[in-house]
Amino acid sequence: MAKTSSGSLFFLFLVLFSAVNPIFKGFASASQHKKLFFDRIFQFGDSLSDTGNLVRDNPIGGHPFMNFPYGQTIQHPTGRCSDGLLMIDYIAEFFGLPLLNPYLDQQANFTFGVNFAVAGSTALDTSTLMAKGIISPSTNSSLSVQLSWFRSHLHSLCGDNSNCRESMLRKSLVMMGEVGGNDYNYALLQGKTMEEVYQMVPAVVRAIKEAVEEVIKMGAVRVVVPGNFPIGCMPIYLSLFETQDSNMYDELNCLKGLNNFARFHNEHLKAAIGELRKEHPNVAVVYGDYYYGLTWIIRNAVSLKFNKDGLQKTCCGVGGNKYNFNLTRMCGYEGATVCENPNERIYEV
Ligand SMILES: *[C@@H]1O[C@H](CO)[C@@H](O)[C@H](O)[C@H]1NC(C)=O
Ligand SMILES: *[C@@H]1O[C@H](CO)[C@@H](O)[C@H](O)[C@H]1NC(C)=O
Ligand SMILES: *[C@@H]1O[C@H](CO)[C@@H](O)[C@H](O)[C@H]1NC(C)=O
Image 1: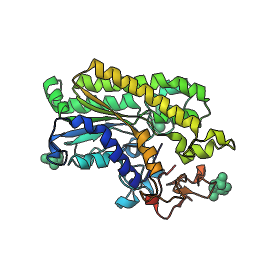
Image 2 (image 1 turned 90 degrees about the vertical axis):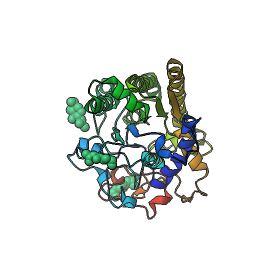
Image 3 (image 1 turned 30 degrees about the vertical axis):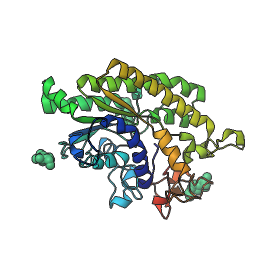
Image 4 (image 1 turned 45 degrees about the vertical axis):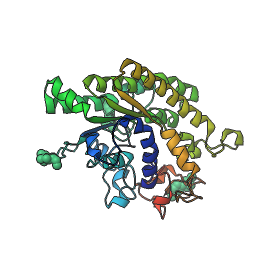
């Protein structure tokens, strides 16, 4: 759900990279022999990382991500939820690898890894969410489905040969997320109370932890697990949960309650990562601090060349409110007006 423009994603990557850096302790300077770090990347997740799975998973059409401004700065829409590239694209480029192909692209070459992320997907299975009265509207390809694709992909390369699998994964980077944000987005946008959403955290974190355990069991030794953004800063929430009570806003003018919730999830996720490290001392499991990354961008937005009057505005909309958010005129939908310089805006929703 959370979408940011290419400019901001680039900076997010820089911040993320400092979190990823401990992985390379003991290696020579990162700028040389980058290719030696990893042969492959495997990405799991949602719209923050999907490079074209949803538009193939559910090809009925009408995907807003296939219309401008999506893909505007890379000439054509690819199914990425961005006007340009995504964090994972910059990560691949940094390591000297080609952009990751989406798993559902039958023609694609997966020599350098696979992107299993599907926009709109969740950490919990859609049936589990459904039992809580939460609908996953765009895809059923939740984390467990992506893991089954991963197993089947490994099987296609190595059959049942565990040495083949392990030696390949030893030289791979696994990006486990961001995932889980949509579980909460759907709950919040479908009218669940904050209390109900807080109660979902242990199950969401457990699903992510189990997914990491599974890739480790298959042989992965380097895993990045990103947390959630400060969702209280996103125009969609600022707009839908707008209130006159100034005590509800923090110093960045974001909704405190939602940011506290995102931090609560992140603290639980970090605790789970701590357990994983104890259980697997030879595996590098690293937390990706997207919360800090986006907060840093907001604090430094003006020097990063974002439009200072648009810091809490979506790029698309029809002047609905001060956040420029209009549910019927979001980016990619007919009748949406697109801001003049998407690069100057942080958010699409
Ligand atoms: C996939 O790409 C690799 C590296 O560029 C190349 O060696 C290989 O032949 C390609 N495979 C196919 C099936 O095109
Ligand atoms: C998800 O699965 C349910 C139950 O099988 C089905 O009714 C629904 O259409 C599916 N949703 C999508 C987006 O594929
Ligand atoms: C959203 O856009 C529609 C179509 O332009 C418009 O009729 C409606 O008033 C807008 N909503 C708001 C809250 O501005």
